[in-house]
Length: 534
Ligand code: ME8
Image (cartoon, rainbow, N blue to C red; front, side, top):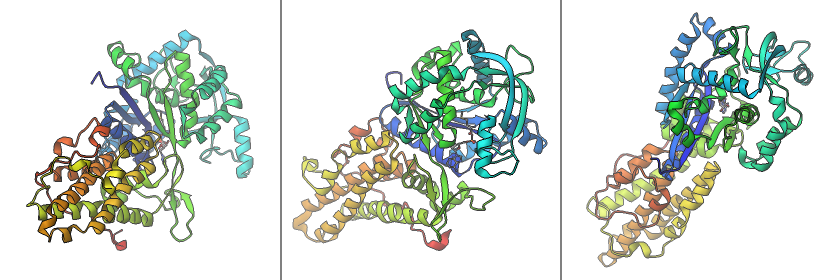
């Protein structure tokens, strides 16, 4: 492992105040696809997800359920583990901020911050939104009140829920000292914020001036104690952001080697709602600590529900009655169809308009009619014409020109370039070009006609080999999206030893098919959906 380059990718740690939903699943699958792709490219991947368990919001939710905050967190954590397992999430670690490792790391952070002189004690007087766990200034609140016409009631600029006035003694982090260094970071590393259009938002915010932020609370106690000040607990974001470093051993001498190898992270994937925390506060915290900065923060858009009649999109919410539960989508599309739809039909950086109609359309067109159909027709023909096997392959079969080989040449590289910039839809289009071409090739070459003519036996071998090889390569490239069906396709071609690869480029070179080995026809991979199935 140690000789492979490290690739460290993280999801946000989700609040335990609610069960996992389509949005949290979207972000987690997005990371999973990248993690699987990078593993297949030979990286030693660490993929982290977890739960954000402290803060007032969690404390309140626990009180409402007559539980202690820890009991409340413990009661919800299994739901996350369960849904991630169902959705084939291949995370290597799962952090909960109530774990000992996080408590120790946060307390270490406090000591380092104090030594470095980047915190001081003061008093906070301003607005707080418990739902967003975010502070707001009078100016921000006034502006939002004006915009939303809230008639004297002060509402959260982000979520429009009523705000609290907070007046308490607090420790502050000197964020204001980092404006220049943050702007220099954005100039020198424009790829720090992805996609690039999100950078403007971050830059404008920082250019507007930064205030020191309150990083401890005294009015409730569900948080990590500040080690040198009784009665103060850590502000939930000051705690939460550190999880990414904790999980690779920040502040733990017994993990020094791991930390040196893993940190900084290559990718923090987050929703667009929390980029300020990740692109402003987090790098400033790391600068204060003298730690390296993550390479990329990728901000994905929000899932919006598209009304099939009007075509309009709206935020998904329980109160609007348009919320879709992950299980509803799994019931309709299966897990792999679910992953494929969200990862290839929603553009990761933008808001995605989702609808059941579109899900069904994508599933039927791409998976049932194209990919599934290609596999089933080709494997059936191979089994029929070659006695349950793939054809014996004559030397040099892979050197002959044909329309599929010309698409497959350089395909893994084109696909990889798209995957690296999280353009999953573009990567999928590259693979689907080969799949569609293979379906056309079946029609054009009509193997059933060739099979009737003994004089054309060599031609039949070549045509079937080309088709099977196109399937083998497509299965590999679709693996990050649909790991189980791809593995199944490879097994049906007696290529089980290829399922786990760390040389995606090498394995996708034209000509890797095994000749004369059993093929399994198997059930349809993606049975066609009829509209009334949902
Ligand atoms: O913010 N569409 O946790 P959170 C797409 N604990 N993604 C969505 C979404 C939607 N409609 N709704 C939520 C927190 N998400 C903090 C994070 S990290 C150190 C601390 C996803 O449970 C999206 O990725 O509110 C968003 O950023 C995340 O869930 C917020 O999860």
